[in-house]
Image (cartoon, rainbow, N blue to C red):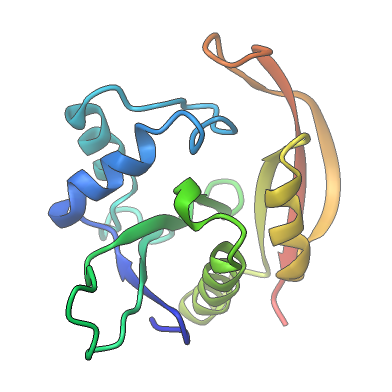
Length: 180
């Protein structure tokens, strides 16, 4: 999939080091209940857990790359800036995304999420909606979902719990986008 500025490719181990750069960054993972990956092996395990395979047809995740003009000599054509996709589909498809801080504030997350959601509904004609759960204090992520047509459904008080988080228990806001 491509947009004016981005390319979305199915996630795989070919860009393991780039994904590790994302998942090992404390700023990037501050809102994640899974926390940072301390080793490349930990990142590899996380990738394997979200790679699409035939036994889990609803799991569909993509690396987000910045598209560069072919004429740009020193462009890094493999620059991964984020990940977007459905990491869980039971009982409902749940959207997840994470972007490296170097890409924040540029509209990349909104562009990638919007493109992915349209793609997901094309791939899954039986899915009436897709949901996302966001830390209640993660205002930038909440704005991304709102811009992409998601509506706030409910707040799960204490919905995220992990010893590494500060505070260790956080509220989650559930958003939903309906098929159009």
